[in-house]
Length: 176
Image (cartoon, rainbow, N blue to C red; front, side, top):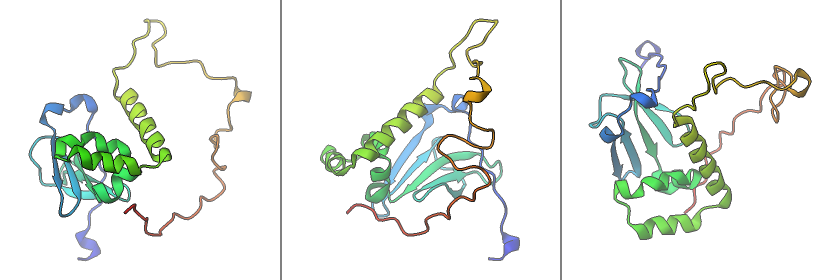
């Protein structure tokens, strides 16, 4: 493969409102420890685009729409980093005893982080709250300028002029 064989892909997530959850298809391949989620039922021709250590988008190469997910190292690593993934255990045929054994090994920090992801995801997917006609719910007064952080700085983050630390390229250690 040469550089001329490569093409830039700009994955686009479909709108949650446009997805029909009754068409979702899930599969788990135990030998490769890979979980597959197809948004439109049967798998479509797609390319895999890495999102994180274990998560990949399945992207339609023609439309660049994300048509599903692939999670590698599902039981070996991913569920320990994101325990929320265990919520689909029954959909992919895991035995309750196997799920409970994994839950027993989870670190409290991972469970808390996963709960916050679930809560934020649920709130983000919820129907917007309707406000009155004069002031829709999505508009809120901002704090006085003196109470806000400078424009190039977010609370807890370094100023934009400070280079971010280099990413950690070491292999992650998964629970055994």
